[in-house]
Amino acid sequence: MDRESVLHQILSTGVVAVIRMRDSRKLLKVIEAICAGGVKCIEITMTVPGAPAIIQELATSVPRDVLIGAGTVVDARKAHEVIKAGATFVVAPTTDFDVIRICREQGVVVIPGCFTPSEILAAWKAGADIIKVFPATSLGPKYFKDLSGPFPEIRLMPTGGVTIDNVGEWIRAGAVAVGIGSDLLDKKSIDEGRYEVLTERAERMVRNFQEAKQSMSRI
Image 1 (cartoon, rainbow, N blue to C red):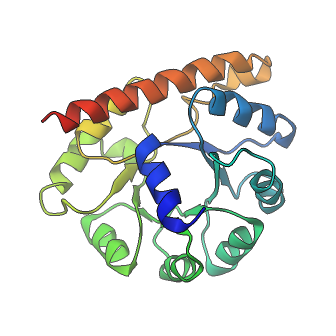
Image 2 (tube, one colour; image 1 turned 90 degrees about the vertical axis):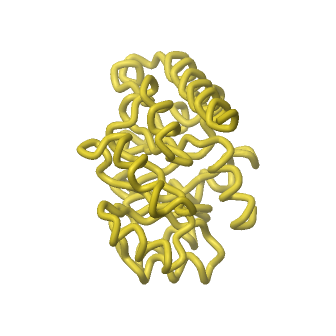
């Protein structure tokens, strides 16, 4: 899938599942469960043991409509590594201009992490496809509403503080997509092997995103 197609899928589906699991043995079942519920943009963070090898394995085994990306990519070396492994999008917790440059050169969607308006604008000018506002927990949806005034063209994605129930608030405030981890990937259900719970949570997440997006299109 080329860069434009990957970007289109992230924007149209709107939900990026952030996977930080330490138990890689359960990883495939978790991914299968949330994909069955409609969440098909999967971010494997570099904190997962053996993340590049997992990305490489998933990139060649998941259905074509499932995107496998890399998260917590903090420098150029890791960016090269995950792109070589097959990551179709790269997410960073901070703004590293070398990471942005490498992703652009390789035709890979890049989503750097920013916090302040100055960081957001600098990353966008450097070629970011989407800006990950992180940590969004302490900012809230109103921050996105405020940013939409001076930066109407910049695509923003909150990570941190996003839940299944509040996703609509972020979208209605101006976010184009969201990153979500623990509230989607319920730890108790994973520990008990009740993967059907993850599918149901993914379905609710996608439904809430789509309803909020449709409400925005009617404004």
